[in-house]
Length: 318
Image 1 (cartoon, rainbow, N blue to C red):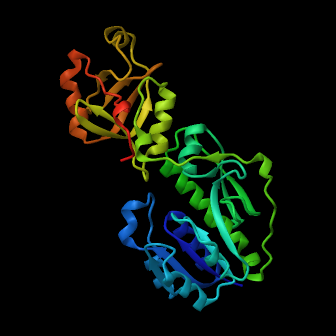
Image 2 (cartoon, rainbow, N blue to C red):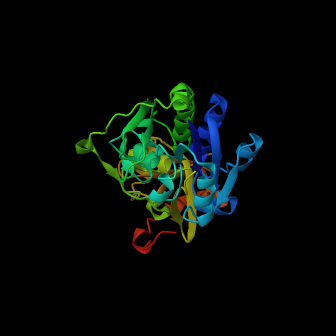
Image 3 (cartoon, helix red, strand yellow):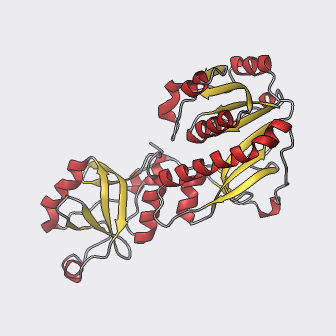
């Protein structure tokens, strides 16, 4: 049995690597063109990998372009693997493949169907998994081919969890290779009564509410971090993106001196990294952008300089 693969992110690249390594007959590879990279978090081009393996390759801007369907029909795949595509795959493309399509999702299906699964997994403290499943009318709802849980560690950022999930995806595909080649992939129906759904996230969801607990702020920073747009706040009129942080209890002296509202900068260490008061504690900002805006906060400590929550002015996504 041969397969075609279509995708646009690091999991797409990982899946193609594994299929090539396993010796699966790959009849076509389709990847989102490089000009779209800025619009897709975790974007990864498939061009060099496909062409390096002498595989037929087509780049596209929109999956609905006529050239996409023509390319697939000319190569007559038995199965279409849609891994990490940032656009909805039309049913007419899936039907081109004799045995339908295979999708990928990184939650414990049927839990966590929907959008931004890695970010929501960290935000809600949920379980992660590698799932390969048959594509169905409803997204993430098809019969499961394989489900393998992926550990989620307490201090994982999205980038960490994506990398660990990709490593597991690679292993799973290698294990499935004989069944792929012989057309004997298993299928187990999902229990739809147990399904839960994650909503879409936008860059504006990264605005930090300092009145939240230190744990909540830390989760948001980890969930919205690279390869996603990051969390953000304001120092005066300067927007500051927060990439990394850690919860940290202030000393009693600092707590007494700065009995201030959430968002107040309590102190700044020798590296210019501020300790910021939250609703129930404090959090140290260890990587921010622009750096000079954060470091300059030290100048204003005597005034109890505060980061601002300008939530009321964030009326639309960035």
